Amino acid sequence: MPSERARALREGRRRAQFQKFRLIQLNLVPLVDTFVAIVFFSLTAATVGDLAPILNGVTLPQAKVGAPAHQELTLGVSSRPAAIVFNGHQVMSATAAAQATSNVPDQPLVVPQLYTALKTAADSIRNVNGVSQNESVTTPLAIQGDKTMRYDLLQRLLQTARLAGFRTITLQVQRATEQGEATTVTM
Image (cartoon, rainbow, N blue to C red; front, side):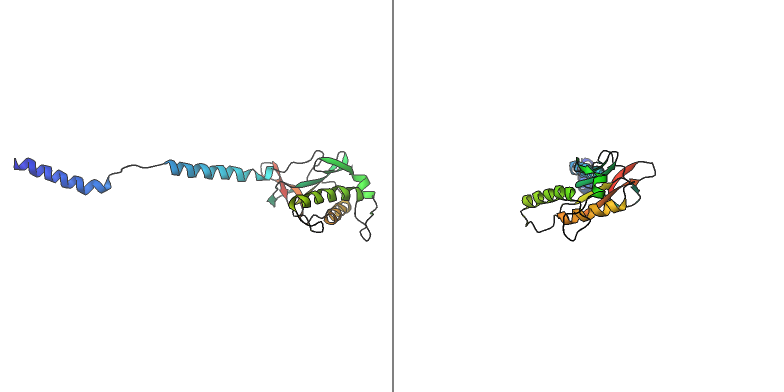
């Protein structure tokens, strides 16, 4: 029986030689978890531009470049009806804002009724953040102006917001795409 013994030894050597090539087990769970996380973050990042709501009655102009809009305080100028809207609440009519005379010395462009609303919001943000009443607010204020809005009114809104304490003021437009869709963009 030496041949059987020789064959058993040969097979034993072969098994030992090829033992290192044998696949024991492949765990795919971490790989699948990684792919799920990548897909989740990709989809989440793709919808950031749609977070800023467009106020009723505001038709935004379109732009081809810009960063996606984020959640911000919103000041809108609508054309139908012609109104100044701050965070969804009508403050005054656009005509009254254009014709209002300033009550702040050396600042002829300030709109008093809008200044009061913006100052109240800025003061409450300061109180929540625990900062001095003389410091600017870091929360961004987005201005959504109808494409028919006059530039002199925009200038008055910018000046009023700056004096109320807002440091970061952005203008929002709609980004035009090749498919004809529009998304809100902060400029």
